[in-house]
Image (tube, rainbow, N blue to C red; front, side, top):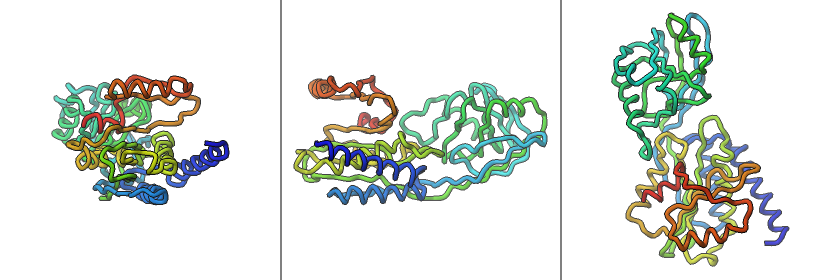
Length: 346
């Protein structure tokens, strides 16, 4: 490719990435911006000669308008757990730091104040099929059984412990500093969460070239973002790369069906797009000879990391030979957190 074409391609890549991350920005599964980017990517693929399927699924669009937390009459800063339900609560609180304390607690009609071992890591959502340890399930089960009016979690970093639209106990999170103020008080907690779960839909965007070919190569990235971020690396760069690939790859270049797959729901609590694709297109299907997942591409001053999984020895050798002279790439140990796991599991 000559320099003028490379320059033009870089400019288009920049424009596409800015559109994804600045014009659309935060694109939670089921939200208005999420639907917009579905249509944008569909049109982009179609303009480049691909046949495009929008694979629909049901989900919720979560909207929040803030939290008010008071203890002993003092206003404290708190944030809503992602996908929490709304509430208006005035009650005593009970401090709990372990599963053992939770097991023996009496928190019905009270506020559960969680810290210690109960908040060291994010609790996996009830419907998250790929990883859900027993102690997470036990914490959720005990809380649902004991029915506190609400939950306040004390966290080390600024992140939500609960991120689950199937978990119906209202919850917020606070910093350690705020948590200490509550722990050192003996008063009543007043908690107001303004939030709403709205029934919605989302879709995977599946663009195909050479659909008549028997064998298939799948290249994937994910459309959605976490709450509160424009998702530049996670995964705006992946989307942009796949869009530009659709411009570069022509039917005559491949003796395979090429499927460019934009999955919707990697950062949503129950991965609905992934589950829909897996149920309809994986399982008994043995036509896929190679799956490439593109996520976290383009971190400044970093090499591009490539993890090879379940490749035949000969194919792995070919890939390594292609990369050995390229200083901007490095092969790393298998990394299991991502959409490539759909294909490994099947």
